[in-house]
Each structure stands twice: as C-alpha cells, then as structure tokens.
Picture 1 (cartoon, rainbow, N blue to C red):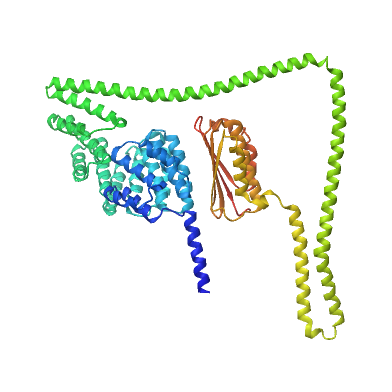
Picture 2 (tube, helix red, strand yellow):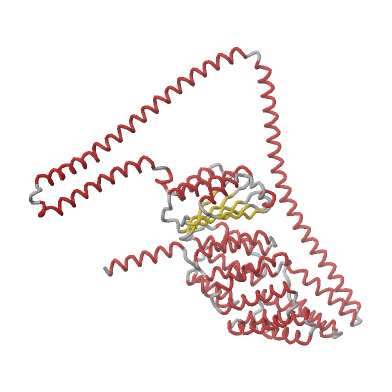
Length: 613
C-alpha cells in the first residue's frame, strides 16, 4: 500500500514538472538577482542554466539591455527561433517580445504580448512570472501618458500577486505615481503619506535601487510640484550618494545623468551658474545611447545658456553648435526610421498591387472566355443539347448506382447488427433462459442456492445491457470521438499549413483529459471557422492557437499577424463570420473578446466554462 502511494506521488510530481508549473529554482534565483539589480551574482548564477535554453537567452538579453541600453539583435532572433518546448518557454517568449516592442516604441504591440503572457502566467499560478509581466506593463504605462488609463486594473492585480517586500514596494510606487498623475497632485498631504509608506517598504526590501527610485521621485515632487528646491536637492543628493557607491552600469549611469541634470537646472534658476555648470558637465560626461540623444541635446542647450550667464561666449557658442548637430543627428535618425516605415508600407502596397493586378488579369481573361463562349453558343447549340442529354443519362445512371450502393450499405449494416445480436446478445439470453429454468427445477431447495442463482442472473442481464449499449455507441461514434479535440485541431492545422502560405501553430496546456463530446465538437467548429476567416480576410502569414484547461474553464487564444480591422466599425453588424462564432460561444455560456488594430493583426480570446448551466 505504501509503495503504491509513493508511486502515485512520484507520477504526480512528474506530471506537474512536465506541465511547466513555473520557473525552475535556478531560473528563479537568476531572475531575483536581476530584479534586485545584483548583477555580480547574476553573472555567476546564470552558469547553472542550460546555455541552449530559452531561459538562458531570455535572461542574457535582459542583462545586456541593463548593461548597455541596447537591443542585442542576435540574442533577440535566437530567442524567437528557439523551439517552444513548454508553457514557460511560450510565456518567456511573449514577455521578451513585449520588452522588445516597448524598447522600439511599438507600445500597442508590446501591450498585446504582455497581455497574452499574463493570461498564460496566471494558468501556472507562478507569482514570480505574474508580477514580472505586470511590473513590465506598469513601467511601460508610466513612460507613456496615453496609456495611463490602463494602469489601474493591473495595480489591483499586482497587489493580489505580490510575494515579497520588493514587489510590495513597486505596488506602492506605481499606485502613488498613477493616482497623483490622475489627481495632478491636488491632494499633496495624501501623496506625502504615500511617500513615507513607500520609503518604509524600500528600506524593508533591502534593495539599493528601490531607495534610488524613491529619492529621485521625492526630488521631482519637491522640485516641480512643491517648488521647494532645497528639499529637492536633499533627496537628489541622497540618490547620488547611493549611485556613487555602485558599479558604472548603463542603467545606473542614466539615472545619475538625469539627477545631475536636474541639479544643474535648479542651480541655474537660482543664479548659481558655477555649480550649474559643474553639474551639467558631469551629466554630459555620462555617455548616452542613440535612443537617449535627446538628453544630450537638452544638456548642451543648458550648458550654452549657463556659459552665456558666466560671460563665456566662446564656450556658449560651442555648446549651442553641438546642440544643433545633435538635433540634426536626431532628425536623421527619425528620418531613417520614417524611411524604414515607408519602405515597409511601400512593400505592403506593392504586394497588394500585385494581388490587384492578378485579379484584374484574371477578370479580363474570364471576360474574354465569357464573350467567346457567348459567340460560340449559337453555333454549338445542337451539340450542347446532345451533350446535355448524354449528361442527363449519365447522371441518372450514377444516381441508380448511388441508390444501389446505399441499399447495399444498409443491408450490410442490418446484417452486422443481426450478427451482433445473434453472436453476443443471443448467447447471453440463452444463458439467462437456462438460469430461469434452473430456478424452476430447483425451486424446492431455493433457499440454499437462491443467492448464487440470483447473482448469476443479474450479471448476465448486466452483460446483455452493456452489449446493446456498445452496439449503439459504435453506430454513433464520430471522428472527434475516436481522435479527440487536440489531435483533430492539429490535423486540421497541418492541412492548412501544407499550402506553405499560412503557418498554423497549436499549443495546448492541461488538455490530457477528454472533454464532453459536444463541447469538443463545438470548440473544433469555432477554431475551424476562425481559421477560415483569417484565410479569407486577414492576409496573415501565421496563426498561433493556445488552448488551456483551467480545470473550471477552457481558454482559447487565437492570434494572427494579418491586416487586422477596426472593431468599432464591425460591432453593429459583427461581420466576417464572427456572428456565427459568437452564437456558438454563447451556446456554451462562454465569453468572447476581440483585440484588433489595422495592420497589427488580431487576437481573439474565448473562455468556455466546463460546468454548463
């Protein structure tokens, strides 16, 4: 009994591991050190992770971004090309794409990837992954005022999943930040209270970077909103004191550069031009990436203005010229980026033009064929009548053959059922008859053999019932009943992908157990209809289908990289076959949501409860 229990426990552990219930211990350790900005330990701990795995490449890309402020394109492409072996691989890839799109300022694409990563992370119940995704989203929202409104629902989720003091600090940090942005610091007393609580959490987290962020946030508050420059300088100096004792990593030096620049502005406005010049010089000496050249342009402008106040026109002229050169460089970078966008748009237009040309040529050919056919029609009228009579004769002959085949099939089916009844049920009923006769013959000593005869009779009746039931099930079995939902979808995806013009990837999680047959059939029809819609309307190259069993519900995420569409325009009529899909989902008491933007693809999320009411 003990051995059997241990064996079952062992199988459960293996099943949980294979299902990918979260990051492994080595990956967790590396991530926590990255989260704590303790890169010295990261360099050592990352050696324990397989260098060919998605986790290793994911962490390495993040480390290089912190160290250099640049995207390592080789690592980026390696992550995307790696085969997805588990749910964790899938989640990390989506988080990475969210980070990448955020880095290259494609915020809507980044949000879509983060959203998908969050939904998948919740299915693992791994708080580390969930908090990682939410933190990345809130960080992106804080840098783009157009996305502020999205922050509030995620802060509440962050509170529920925060698992240590560091995460609790960032819950408070972003909560106070977005609340005060919404109120525009009208409730300053409440904000000051939140800053005090935030400082307690920063100290409790035992993390130097949280204190830097806290002090810098305080400095900005007192400088900009309170106009208390002395208090602002105190907090900026506290942040600088911590930064001066840290390695010169890119992400830390950029923090330092921003604080030095702010101190330079404060001193300039207070007519302390000597100290202002010193702060601006230190800020300018910290190198920026091309992505942050705007900071150098602003500092150059301030340095020029400061030297004018110090009556040093030559130095002022040098930095004003440098400012103009930096502006030209920024304009060139912007122009190059715009040209690349135009090239991409141009290529898309060329592809569409090619399709239009093909359609026009095909239409012309079709029109010529129709005209030719019309001209020949009268001359060939008699021949066509003869051909039609011949076709009619052939059709009647085929119809007779079909009827014969149907009758023959029905006869074979009747024969098979008769054989089943004769060979299986007939024998059982004959045995049952013997038992009943035995009851009549031995009615005098019935008391002695009563239980045994009754038991045998009951067993034979049960077996006869099961045979009849098996015959009925055999007649009603379908393709889905024999293969199952996931193999059927995978087979269908393989058939669609065989055209080489569209690749359909199917990933399933927790779908080892079969569902109710009617639910499986409906889900397959929904997936089939969505793929058909993509083929007809989206001009997509890839479709990704994620199917997850959350025990109480089934979650489907169907994502394509096609043309996308304006949701508001189709809502009144719910076109492109979506009305039929919506009815199927509602028939299962499910919900359907659509996230789509023109030229950015479409994501459809469907939740179907497994407990039908």
